[in-house]
Image 1 (cartoon, rainbow, N blue to C red):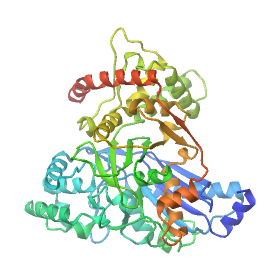
Image 2: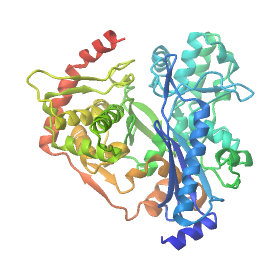
Image 3: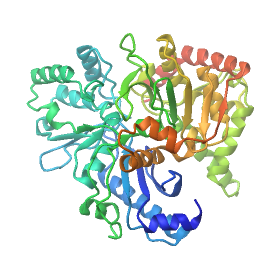
Image 4: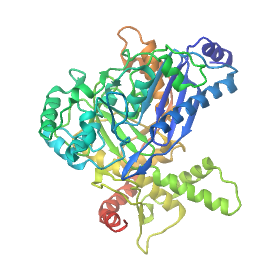
Length: 532
């Protein structure tokens, strides 16, 4: 579209907005009828580690959302000379899982416990055995059950239990709902009914009651909706909360809120069986849409769903680019100490480009990027750690190659389980900050997984764009038009990308790295035990 067409779309209120609250950035993307981004805005934020819990303050949520929207509205003004007043659709997404319990008055009962916490081990283990279904530590129901086991006073006052995406949607639309993909990270979904598994709900209820819980899980969970279903509209109170200037008009339809997994599937057109995607940022996770259920329960594999309720195998790892980001800050400080101006984009680009020049086996370096615990390898806590033997070569390319290889190492271990289950993948897409520098992260991931990896032109738009697509589907879909057909025919038709197959040298080198990585996990355990 040319500029005059975009101006007309904005003035007529035909643009669609998607906002996603990620781990380190809240991003908004505005799209037109052709689904291409026409404006964006963002806001940086960080989680806090307080009283042994990873959390975000709720006031930071609203400061971030308002700042993100203001940034987007300013982008519209500066680029097109238009004041953004009306939208045709809106959708809100956020990092999945976690624990946000509210009382009858809508007051938060305990500080937000995010997906990053590894404090629910006993609950997760007991529920996995009880339900014969893997319940990871970060799932909302694991947090609830652990609070019950702990005898926390607030549990019998819970009237609403939701996620961050569900909370934001509730406050902006008045509806306590979740998209099915996001809901599947709270409690197991029955793909036949499209809602929470009734038999498992009953089992949970009995077990929780035996520990003195008087509440009803079914009553406090949000209503489950499929992609495209009516999730309410932006209320006058919601419009004022998102845009305190009072410029944004209420009334636009809202899509069911989804998690970052669901928006990643939408953003990469990975919603049909034998397709998959890898989202690599602060955390890293793969989503593979299954043809059939797995033969057994694997603690390393989450069973969740697409935004339309199809079963998905998810390998989720808590740590990905956090160490890369930390070292980027170190290098910035080094440049500033030399009196040089530091441009973070140039720093990241140099780090990634140098990794491509490193030895495929990282020169023997072994690096653990565990800022927090890593359930895939059995760690409740983490300590970032670099190990090398005297004969190993420590230089900048090998150091960066180890950083990028470590970022995908635990994902590789989880994906090996799916390979053992004979799960077939026809297309695997990468998206997120790890892939921002062309080809480097893509090449290392392909070597790790032993399969071609594709990165599309739109990979950098991320989950906010994926949420905008789901919001567009909510308002534009034809009668009977499925999400997979909408994405294939209206969004991704004609889109191009880059596909890289693993080279034998890269594959062999990564295999050497991962063997040393696994053999050295004892050193990481010692670091956790000794560095207190």
